[in-house]
Length: 168
Image (tube, rainbow, N blue to C red; front, side, top):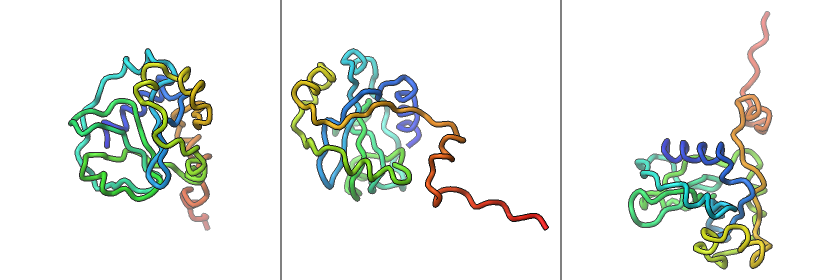
């Protein structure tokens, strides 16, 4: 999902996801975030084209852009799959990333707010609305792109490449 991955990187580098909330969390389905703490930022980002379908499926831990039933309707909202949601593949939901290592233990602890907050109000009022009416929403403090070296240090041992063979 190259367009989705590029958009995510662009949003992360712009600080879009910093101080945001998980505003739609449905147990055994997904955790959704991606509306800015600052409502003005939500209007700045336009929709992007859909990526072509890939062999990658909406499995546990995969990140996918949310969209409507209309083509090319992805913008800033993303969800993390709690389980296998492969039925979404045929609907054009193409995963672009994966939660690494032990990260899903954190995702599994996201507060299950369900669909209580109004997405329209989150979009137009930002964190002021969520902090007042839904203070229990799990928060994202900061999102950033790691260098290759930082990523290697963060990877669990199972994801580290094997050491080179010893010289005789």
